[in-house]
Length: 599
Image (tube, rainbow, N blue to C red; front, side):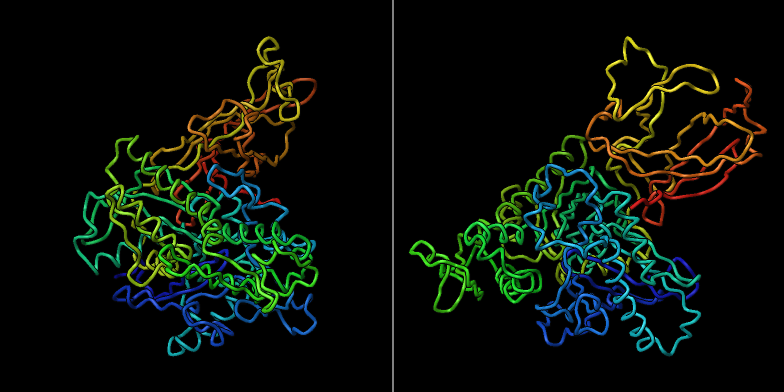
């Protein structure tokens, strides 16, 4: 397993998850994927169940809000009674429009008790503080594990996993949080992004090759269903090569939804609120919020829930509700002698089924997409991720596969660590995905000549009429110039090229700001008035005085106006894992940039 660089490096996979997070690593001279070490010695983990120690809870308690803490506590260190924050990863992508596959209540006020932020703080702040503690742990562990090496000269390549469906802003917020936390802080270190399903595919298929040669075959179609705590991400590949190196080609536009395991938690929270009203909702977050003894009991029941349970005896979850009024009807749901909430098999099934149906709908959608475009048939579905370990979900997906004559598999070592170990494999072996499908339409807004007879009903809150300073004609903003289509084939060399004549006034340097838009509809609209057109972010660059010398010039109203021919090359498949823009004027590159983050 040779590294792409001759110099010895440490490759580190970082999985910042909605509910659990983890790291794994290997030296770049690793001979085999079995040399990948996944970390299990998280602070406080020894007092908890060993099976969860391959990751730590994505939970943090701030010292400034907990007087008993001398410093921030994280993961297993966070006790139920502490003021703490969980599930905030989803808030990094809150500005993105919800899809048909998202839990419609993912950002609802009714679930504030489950997903909230400190007053005046952002999701990026919480991500940074959590990742800082994870990084500090890694730094201490690095010296213990690799003390025989010259650590000052050992480059570290961090591969941070993100949902494939995430917006460009969410990807950059995650990367910025990691960099602010200390990852990649040395000049010889770097931080890269990799999509979670791609990392999962890398590890799952590699481990399947080792386990059973006939399972992964050239020309077969494999769907990777990454079911995590917050998101479900589905990507489908054709296996182009197996030996000497595994190579894949994406055959359908990936689909995703914010309908992971926390969907079940939100359903449970609503069920408790509906049944017990204020007696439940008035309780402190430390009693019913994430990490509380009550939610830990539910987590255990959720983790073990199976459709094959022979017992229909109600489960008991201890919780004192002093405001609960006694009634005969309430005795069905609450046992006063043990101060316990009663939860039946039917209750759990009703909590699970909406999330499971979302997953099955995503799978069906992906199969239909592959058939529609005439690609290879899907032979195998690989289920990974934390939620992918749920017995009930495994049974449901396995049953669907049997009905549709599709093989079903999970990683040989379990679904939990597939993503973080796959991230390390990406650093060791390079990308195994030769060709991808663009998940959205991308383009820039342009102005066109204003024709009152055609354009008078434009949305004035979104668009405006202006007079072009160079030609003196009236133009209307808000027309879309789509540069890359949803479903287009992209590889590492693919660039989206946008040519625009930028008009500037005055003989001076000018700071320019362009807005990049996207749309996930199959057919993109012509203007920004369609509500499914989303702002990706702004691209900022500077046109200098030297660039005006070669531009067309016109004097109007006593002022010089210039028309500068600008090209923006957008790299959609950069190794960094996010969009990278090259700005060219007169054929010469004047700068590179990324989307500007305006929180």
